[in-house]
Image (cartoon, rainbow, N blue to C red; front, side):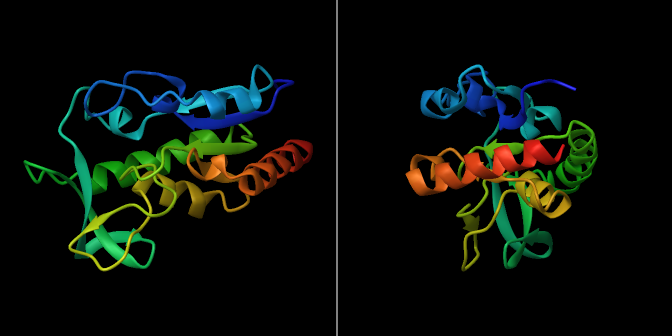
Length: 174
């Protein structure tokens, strides 16, 4: 086992060029929070489910036959084509979480507002409420004790301190 805590992170936050438009969202404040004191476990659900880079943007759309996201049911669809990625993402997410479970993660930092990674406040088209990204939903449901935040919320000192405390506590449990 690594002597450093393992923290999962959305690959775009590390600076990997995996976003739909071929760019990244490297977040120096998040990375600086930990420096070299962690082992990052990078994940990009969209790339790993086969969407490629660059790619068509995706969105959550309210639909009665969809999967749960927060308080409503949604489909994960291509913005222009309407291609349905819902089941592919759900299947991949379940498999990925099982792999992550074996890594003894101490926390996870996800990309805010992403239709796959957003922890909260993800826009849902044709829906009354915001929801959670499909990968984030699976991760949080499957690993309920794992500290999970997004890079935006970690800018709040109280949220950041609570997350860091939970990461340290989780590391001691491993």
